[in-house]
Length: 585
Image (cartoon, rainbow, N blue to C red; front, side):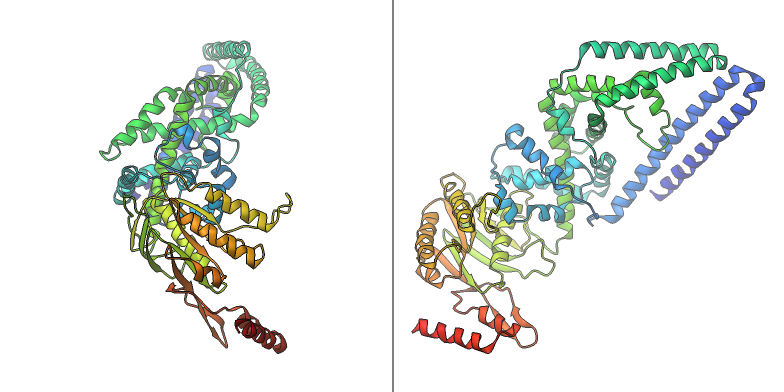
């Protein structure tokens, strides 16, 4: 690899020097030898520049592959544009892709589980389709083991074959991110090309060909005439490009995307045979977009003729009109191709993520009428020094009690995110994961909605109702609820909470509910297991948490301990303790 890289770098440098010498000699001896010398010199210059450009691109690709191979599996220091990353999911989604055996993670649950941060942890994507499809995967968990195993076959192949992996990464690294414009605007456009203008631009392009031939035949003494024609066409090109300025970068990116898809369609591997065949099928009717977008912008630092070609042949505006027609005829194909290409890079990220985890397991899904979850040493991927826990549930929910900051919310998120990862990327951050398929729903990170005037309690009510309304589907729900109805008074809170917990477990669901209400925890029947987290207090360090899950109900709190550690007045503390003692009596 390094020898080839050195060869192409040196060859590029020699070609560039040779091109400079040729153009220098041409204009040095041109006045003496006449127009023919200019023609030969310029032709040689163009040829050498094209060769140098190809050599440069090749060395750049080899350099990228070398970097990708040696940096694996580390993630890059990427800047994430989440507004753009979310777009494919919201613009198209599973219905457009005709997905089967899936469910959607709703916005509240996605926010509760910090899905954007999870994506940042997993992703090493270098293209916009890759990032968008990774997010799409995380929002659409599967409920079919067969589909997840097919994903796993590709992920394993990517992990085990560095050469193939580097090739895929290099292709999509060349595609890169779309920093400007939005390719979905082209896909969803209602624009109808003006046939009269399109015909005019084509006629002008033909006349440019005639002008170039005229220059070649009559030589350097006609340069002023040619430059005049060139100036006119440059003006027309700039005016026409201004009409579609916003779409031009998207047009270029779409062309680069089609070229990337065509490169991926050449991969020869038995495990990827069906996947590559699908890419081939989808890219075939779109392949003309490749040729029609090649000369929109420079493709490398040495393509100095692109602007000239654009000016002479009005390629930008003509390409736009042509490509819009192709997109309109093949919109569904293009969306599905976008999904296939992006998903392949998402799988590369998953393979990298697995290698970066301290440990992981493949999920074992149970296909029966029981609602079950059994995990050993389960951990949260966003925690660098997370404390693993184990638990087993069979047709029962869990009531979690414990002090503030003891780990209740983190534990619930840990379970939920691992259910999600198991049903999306077939990966669980644990030593063992055996479970039913679930639909994950949560009510955790709520707040007052100041702009709408909604109170915290109203937001709680809506959030819990959203869960209750989803409990009649075939796939069981897995609900996590933190501090149910803490925005209202304790009498009504406990009464309503008891009925809600019973309602959930009488339906097709499992739930983990965290509460500070000991009365609620003690009143729950055999349908709920009781677990808790607790802490100790150290005179120097303050509250010390072990974050270990324990069976039973936590009968102690840390609120007064924390006040004492922070130095609250003794009167407040002693009176508070006395008040609690009197209530217990």
